[in-house]
Image 1 (cartoon, helix red, strand yellow):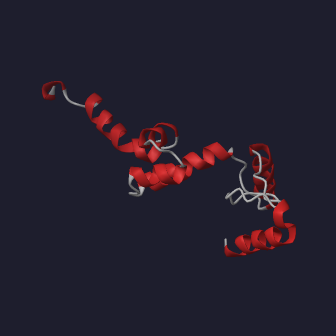
Image 2 (image 1 turned 180 degrees about the vertical axis):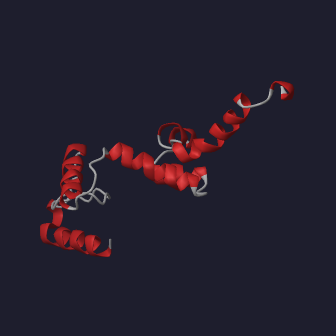
Image 3 (image 1 turned 60 degrees about the horizontal axis):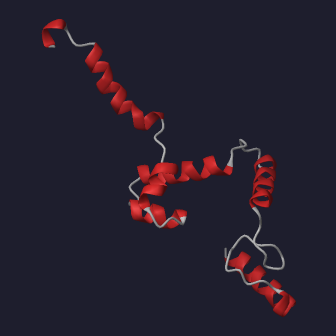
Length: 120
């Protein structure tokens, strides 16, 4: 990240007033914010280059927030990382239970159908 900021500083110095100081990290050489299409294209190229499974960026984002939530990161911090002002938005759209999260409920459900007639 330090190298990236140094690169941005050099580009800003070179372009002077022509540099767009957007305040964002993902910008082109003149400081303009990348479009979602540009970010997706670059991400897919990196996934291919490193022989990674190609996933949608939205799904990767949701997986990261689910992982953080499952490992104790407080809701208000998740929302802040996501750029949301409302915690409910983050929880609703990005924190998704996976198979392991559901295993405990499945075990309880299994106990219901396996109960003896006398136990009910």
